[in-house]
Length: 266
Image (cartoon, rainbow, N blue to C red):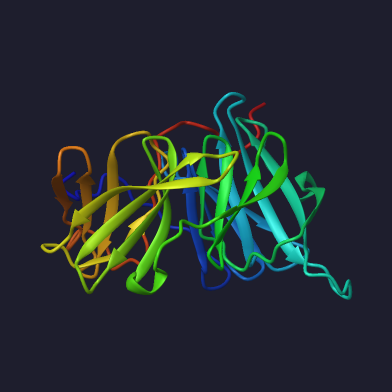
């Protein structure tokens, strides 16, 4: 927690990266025409070329089957309907990845223009125009939830995260230096409750780092590019000082160490 770099590796990317998301032990990077899957623990990197641009993706982990799934959404030309095509790729330990691994799974009737997503309990969530579109990785079905009923204008930053295994919306207000945490109490009805309000007066908070763990902590990235681990229950904070340790970053990701292999084991 002192910000000491314990591992560092490099890989060549064919174009600027616009997406960096993680789930469990793996992470994915997306450029315009390529998608890269990486395991930070082993340094493995696998590049995938796509038939269309990787502008919108989702990524998640299924603990029961020890599988990862990547969802790629793309616009369907000349359909006249507001919907997106979608395909999925399944990653299994030691089986390798090829371009032919993609399979079509039908359409999504909602326009998702962001790849910032959260996977929680085997379900991937995207925030779309104050709605939340979800994709169940096991059932391979889409669903839509409403946002909490609140005054969105008072928040300078809002993000999805997992708090104690519950889908949560976190809003940061620069005016009041407060962080509000909304918890989804019922996934069937989509009911929300205002769970916590935290004073962030001593932090210059910038964004929330999505987390899929079951702790009572929220990770906050500050404008000074430090990371704060804040315990909601204990009202305590721990600063992870990255200054001087790594180059300035755009957005950090959380992952869990694993020897999950991206290459085919013979």
